[in-house]
Picture 1 (cartoon, helix red, strand yellow):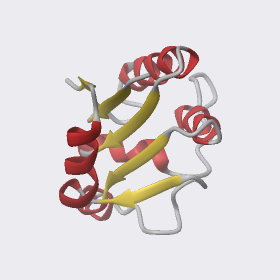
Picture 2 (tube, rainbow, N blue to C red):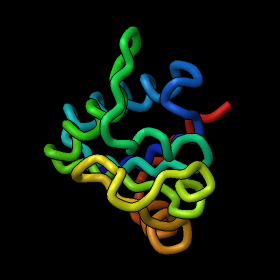
Picture 3 (cartoon, rainbow, N blue to C red):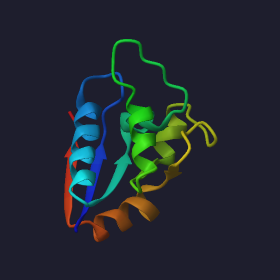
Length: 118
């Protein structure tokens, strides 16, 4: 099967964009594809451990569950630090990485790429 890269720039509580990310990732995983998610800008909030939204889907928990199925979740380090997210605050299985070292590899490896942003 192929490899899909999903980029997200929207924060977990900004709108429903990250719900689209989780549904797209689920569909790709169910069809046997390898899935990589890369967050930058507000998209880095998806990896913050301990999120507890009351009336919205817990995007971080959903993505964490998908990492146990082999999905890669990486976010931009610079964007994290700009938003006060530090190493050690990411959920288990996710990675604070870089656009240079991680996103560039994901883009070159992916057969398909989708960007979810406003």
